[in-house]
Length: 317
Length: 285
Ligand SMILES: Nc1ncnc2c1ncn2[C@@H]1O[C@H](COP(=O)(O)OP(=O)(O)OP(=O)(O)O)[C@@H](O)[C@H]1O
Ligand SMILES: [Mg+2]
Image 1 (cartoon, rainbow over the protein chains, first blue to last red):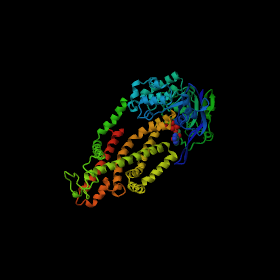
Image 2: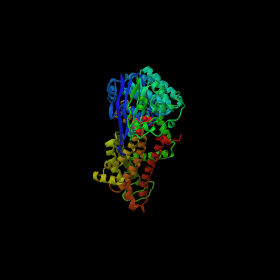
Image 3: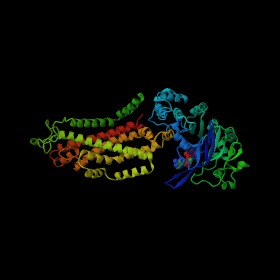
Image 4: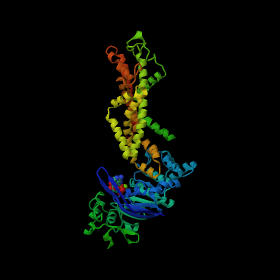
């Protein structure tokens, strides 16, 4: 059982300006059940786009995304006939994630009853069970979203995702909008739930500290491509790609390389425009180790040690 | 259940804090009661009965608002006219709201060619002045009250399309709509349960405002001779008929005009009050 993402490309055509945005440029990932894949990268590198594709909200222009061999796009729609979904989604913004006019209890009950996940007389029990599961008191059922704190709302969003009984949970920056004080609580909740329910996670963040906390595998993305992939010891303790190294140097509490510096300091220049991708390696314009060859030779992932893959010819040597 | 009450009570509570809302509600309520009197036949006289011996009498204890050139009781006719104005405009706005809101929400949600089609068609209707468009439609339909109501309804449908479509475009982009889709909810459920409740407030406000415009349009049509036909009274028709008499029989003009003004101003104030009560951003707390 696993999630397989194969050679996925996604472009957005902007009709008004006649431009084409290359949001994803060939993504290959294989994620075994029960594991957590952390995806990290700067704003605009395509993390949320990948999340939308994996949840079947949008279809890729090229390539395929399969869960146990069937396309997620079809399987997530059809699967409710078998009373379970495959993949669910938790977003970053706890305010936009809940219908402001729907009470918390109803927001959970709706999922359970629409898909007839339990017998009618057990729906309320199931709702209470889900609230308890995410550490919320039962009397929150009667509240509206604006009567909850950000952390509580995010727990409700997690409970709603779990109500559909998914195997895979895509978490798109689930704690980024929260107060630092509640981040750890929600992170620990996610880890508990993973153990308890045997869930597989895709955890998206631009914060390597969060990624290190929760992930088994880490993918570093840059301009719609994965530039480094491996387990977290490999990627975070022994980064090989200059971009990963820059990200890690910018980590606030890093203990790996030198003193923390801001990302702006460790990386020169801006992320290039995904409308006009650079030739060769997409990162060469900002790379401290770039050679003339980098401007002309596109880089693909290759394995340097088992499981650890890097898209940089400097790392090959 | 308890919370549902709390919530409606919340909006009502805010409504009562708005002075314009209260004044407007009182004005409109009085006019509705007046119209109900007419429906129940509780008017001093038959509105079309001619009292030949009492032509163009000023206001008195017998004829509170005086009589017109046929000796008809202006008070009874004004009540009957108000009933007619309200019947026509409520029917018209009901028609416009149901049609406009359905198309507006669908256009916003479905998007693409359907949205462009709906928007274009409603823009074409919008380009005409309301009264001219209503005139053209009434002229081709007829003079029964429901013809007038249909014409006014068609004229005000594009406004409801706009009012419903705009907020749908915003709400559609909210994460909870995307999550609803990943959760496998049907489009019908998403529209009814997750989009409609969140675009409801501006629609309610628009209903109040459109009612007042519809009353003015109905009066305008009758004034121009294309709405209610004599001898049946309508506020607009009474104003038209009173024009040549106004110089020496002011009461024939003033009372129907006053009633139009009261109900129109009242509905506008109700609209303001609703806007304040339903929009959390405008609430002062
Ligand atoms: N619906 C869309 N239409 C057009 N362009 C889009 C659309 N969605 C995303 N993009 C573009 O695709 C690229 C990737 O966007 P995406 O939202 O996936 O980035 P991200 O990594 O999630 O960024 P962030 O960290 O800011 O959330 C960006 O250049 C973005 O402008
Ligand atoms: Mg994002």
